[in-house]
Picture: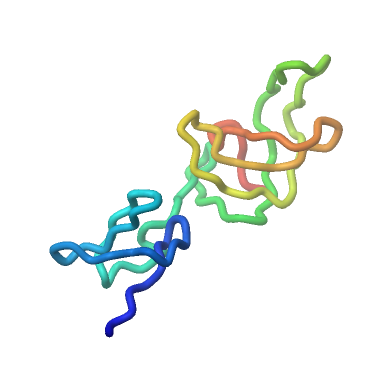
Length: 113
């Protein structure tokens, strides 16, 4: 019996083939058998159009107000070790900001350091 690859999105082992497409019943992701994970990967660009990757260091380009905090994240703040995530609300960077803790940022408000 031929073994099908795990889903590149959620890692599920329950993938099945339908008309040349591989389908994951758990997350609904569809892809072709020859398609690599890098082709379906998330591409996030900073305010200057540079491609960001997990672990990069970025700099905030404008003051950002933070809900529930007394201050704002100041322009020029460096954020180290970012993690890219897919999000429906546009906040595609997970990170820890010194003095504020863990939070999500939009890539349009940072530049690659």
